[in-house]
Image (tube, rainbow, N blue to C red; front, top):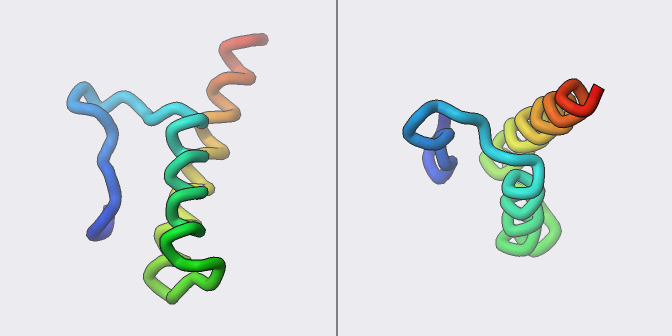
Length: 62
């Protein structure tokens, strides 16, 4: 991961989609609506992790 990111919990468990969504919103607020190159990279990684969390929830529900 990169500076400023939060690794998964101590047990290695993935963060929840809600937690990731909150981090994405906070990133946009901190950036004032315009992302720097580093923030864009952070955003992309958060979105990928969020999508994986959503897929995991859907798989559990099925």
